[in-house]
Length: 191
View 1: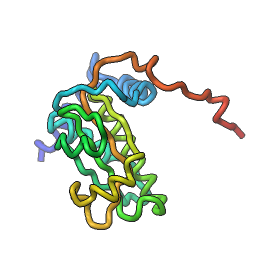
View 2: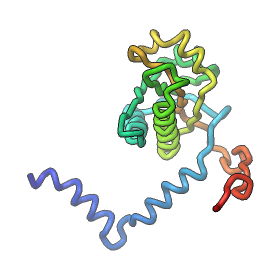
View 3: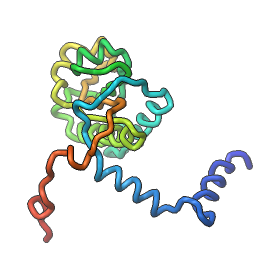
């Protein structure tokens, strides 16, 4: 019984010990990752992603919130470079695609689609937090659902909702490369 509390004790000791990590620092790092993300485009390069990092990225998707905790998603990891390149052109070796799918036709199941969107963003942000580039695709969904479902091994009754490309990237200045955003004054109403 004492062994099961050891990891919690060690984590608590690191977080609360003098000079240890503080919650505010961890929260700031998470916030910084959210507001400084960059959807990589042409700067993906060859290089493998470790199985451990893939699993960390997938756990982030698994931990996304969902309506009534239904967790309607299924994740398919495409590591086969030839297959990935047929779905998204210009995929360097070692890049992966994570296909997020859900039961239904992918257009009319609103809560499940939103849930899959939350999982997709969690995957996207986790990849960047681990130092990889990531990009979300929704454009190829009709092609994926009409031509690749069997080859991808999507579960029966599932349709792809989104893809997340993950790979190594050349370092760039993400702040200057990111698309411009509207100001809060243009998109927020306070009542």
